[in-house]
Length: 275
Image (cartoon, rainbow, N blue to C red):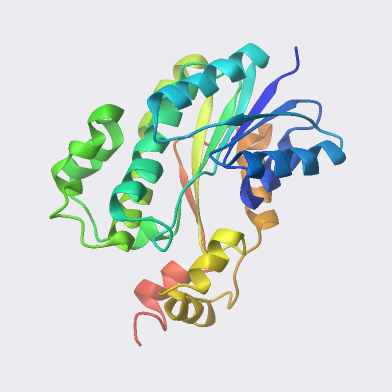
């Protein structure tokens, strides 16, 4: 059987990484929207990749575990690209926490249990996690290690503690990076690695929603005052993801790589901090 690379969230970023790491492997494309998985499968099929599809709701333990079983039955799972999520302009607080935070914890747990030796995973988080004010050591540890099914009961995630959808998103993405660090220790017992990428504004349909949404003016200002002066592309995230999943990246695990064109640097130390 062919080795299997699982892509959860079959959008532009997931596809960009998959194209670089999946030659000669089977790509299992999973998404909440069947049409999104089908579109991605068609694109990759026409580019010479062997593909299959699955429907998954990452906020459902049963759904995530069913996907993990399907992947393991398809072949040895050597790659995971988790790029599913919702943005602050797309969903209410509860959905953001359920999908972006709890869903990622479920995915890391389920696939950490089946990843083949030598396998590698990538979680797509966000620059937003880096702009959340510092949490306490206890809060960091709670986000990193609390059993997945207890995560949403943490005091820092209580309704009165989460101010708005952006705050929920920042907490979720900070939690993703912390969770990856903790899970890397567990994945290592299977001889596998996992890392996190925190992109800035990458031109995807989700980013376009944000740029045209209620926070669009602020995001456009971020870009104009950042050192890079532009948004990123899925291919740039794809190149980093491929490196982290490759033999060249074999000494990297449990890490979170910020790639935002310097927006966060400017937020703390540059024009964004001073205006």
